[in-house]
Amino acid sequence: MSADIAALLYLVSGVLFILALRGLSSPSSSRQGNMFGMVGMGIAIVTTLAVAAPSDWISWLLIVGGIGLGGGIGAYMARTVKMTDMPQLVAAFHSLVGLAAVFVAAAALYAPEAFGIGAPGHIHAQALVEMSIGVAIGAFTFTGSVIAFAKLNGNMSGKPIILPARHAIHIVMGVAIVLLVWAFTTSADPWLFWAITILALVLGGLMIIPIGGADMPVVVSMLNSYSGWAAAGIGFTLGNTALIITGALVGSSGAILSYIMCKAMNRSFISVILGGFGGDSAAAAGAEEDDRPVKQGAAEDAAFLMKNAGKVIIVPGYGMAVAQAQHALREMADLLKKEGVTVKYAIHPVAGRMPGHMNVLLAEANVPYDEVFELEDINSEFAQSDVAFVIGANDVTNPSAKTDKTSPIYGMPVLNVEDAGTVLFIKRGMSAGYAGVQNELFYRDNTMMLFGDAKKMTEDIVKALGH
Image 1 (cartoon, rainbow, N blue to C red):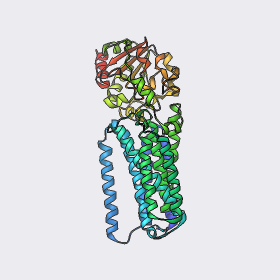
Image 2 (cartoon, rainbow, N blue to C red; image 1 turned 60 degrees about the horizontal axis):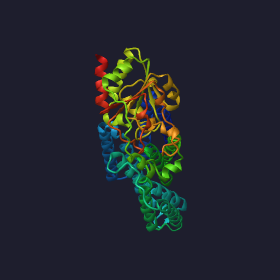
Image 3 (cartoon, helix red, strand yellow; image 1 turned 30 degrees about the horizontal axis):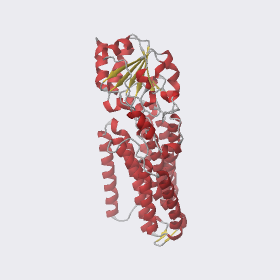
Image 4 (spheres, rainbow, N blue to C red; image 1 turned 90 degrees about the vertical axis):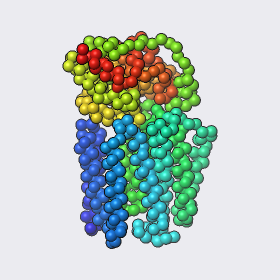
């Protein structure tokens, strides 16, 4: 294949990736966006194979075997993964992108002639810069994503693990990596390459360990951005236009998403990286016992209140995801609409454990897109609603974020559920939220607690509505 045709096909692939991102920005066009992305990736892979076609059948066999093995594992995971496990699956995928960047950089270091970047011991200076930056970001992304996976999957505590003098350690290691990159670009010493890799691997883990579970949506989008930049850096080393375009798109979109997530929590990106919610103050607050009385109700009480309401706003959270209650929730909403009740869904940007987590779950349950609203679009409507039905959301509904300056979530925009006529709150118990902060909403006069599993409670409400 000629270089001109390859460049044209890579351009087509890049345009399709841009259209994919555009499509994924809305639930109604997300399927089309996914299709654009798959077609674009298919074109990029075929073009790359055509440009760098090996001359021996063994290489072809390895390539086809690798594609088949990886594609088969990916298809199996996509079909079998539970929706509650989607955040950790995304983190796992990010780790693989980072690891791939490390492997490609190592291959380029030891076989530069195969990549057209020089000869052993005489690699072009520009390639050395690209290679070292790519491997540093890739290694950081790998271990950071592994830690994120462990926290999301429950293999590691979701609470921040605070190391002594962690900021000083991070700064020293960061400066050391920069100095090693400079030294490597001037000497091409393989030992320096592996020193960069090891330090970046350690730093990636150390940077994510102190971040609490409430900041996980930001961490996931941040690691998504890093994986993109790692891919772009290796794309320059390989001279692959499609990889550069793809990496730049993923890196920039992930960075923008991280900014949006931080804005939704009224936190700076730096504050998230330096330490997450649920630190010492939050842990202390969560550890305090609160014996204030709460109003407790049953499924029949909730069904009666909502059946006689004019407007109900549903607020889903991670508890809904864990209980897999989205289908029962949609059934409940359908019954309410048959009774003439207006039903809407309020989604907080950081509800769940990854960006868009609640939107994905509601889409899986075939909830109409026009009933789902973001925080800024629906917050003013709580005051005109008869019932706010909170299912598994905690920190994002805590009114203390607006009033308690000592709270670690102070200043975070929250859903104004307390403004509704009645708040129905499904929760297993009175434990604090993932940020380690007790929710003041539990003790409000207009709040009725519905203790139990989110799915079971919702199904009982559905039965009560049917009677």
